[in-house]
Image (tube, rainbow, N blue to C red; front, side, top):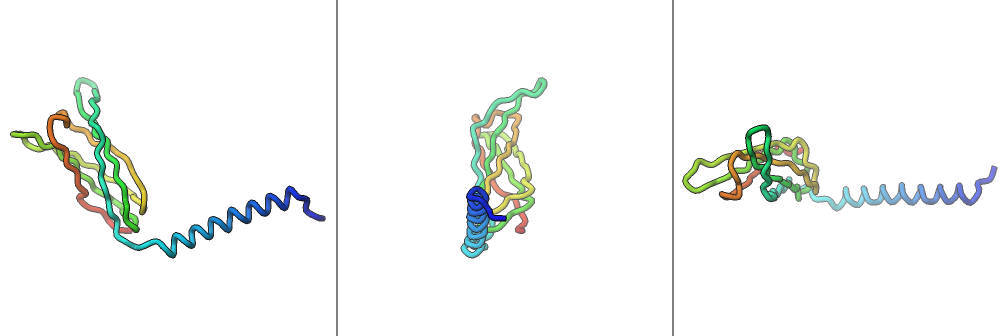
Length: 128
């Protein structure tokens, strides 16, 4: 049985997609550098939120891995420093950060972060 033009078209499109995917993955594998994870933290604008009778402040956190390796168990800390008061700290963990990826999360504070200075840092991670 001979194939008609539609079958040949579907075959050609499928072949181009598969070969393109294999080509891209091969290129990425050959050119990717095995640099360690390079994590960058960006803090968003604090947002007031009320939970029950307590008022808290949510700070959005965006973490980007610009390195060439995956990081697992990424532990982050955000500290709120205010003049004359004890610093308030919040932390969280990101289970899996592939290379060249971005993850978002948030931390909460009991006092208004707009009245102080926020600092963030990576406490640790494991390379995969």
